[in-house]
Length: 197
Image 1 (spheres, rainbow, N blue to C red):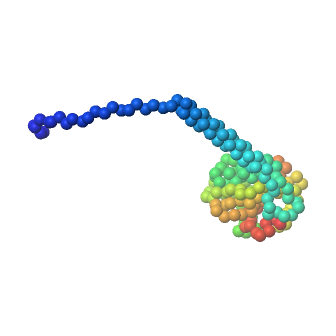
Image 2 (cartoon, helix red, strand yellow):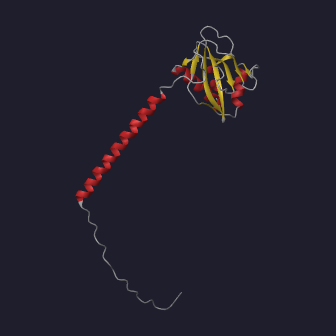
Image 3 (cartoon, rainbow, N blue to C red):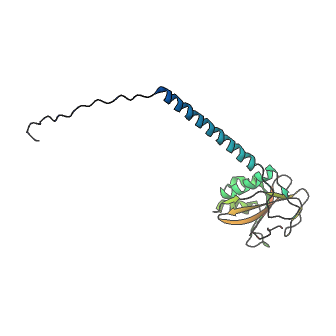
């Protein structure tokens, strides 16, 4: 260590000036800020309400131009979304709740041939799929078979909607029985006029 004595260094001490605020300006600023926050909160609530109303007013999908198509019920839209979530999430345990025992999935790759048949094969497909499935448009319903599909048993209906599988756009139709159980799924490559026009 240094054995030399330290010399005092004189630092002038200054006084810190007192900060004075005009209380009337502070109160005005606070009122103004509160007003802005209230207006923004009202705007956010109004925008949220408008989005909810708009989301609930889906119109039939534009692809099926045939007059047999109409807007689907909320239950049918929920069924489509549930089935797509089952495939995306690999939820094998939920398969039995939405598919018939002898359900079929017919692929766009080979529309004339069944890709998957029966609940056991559907469970296997759900378990091992690596794709994501997302509905990208409204669901339309038909109670008569559209072009290219088989006859429709009494009480059954078709649900049509566009969807993404991974990043590719497809058109799909579910044949659903009167109990809301999926009997057949068709997945088609999109066409200019729609798969079922």
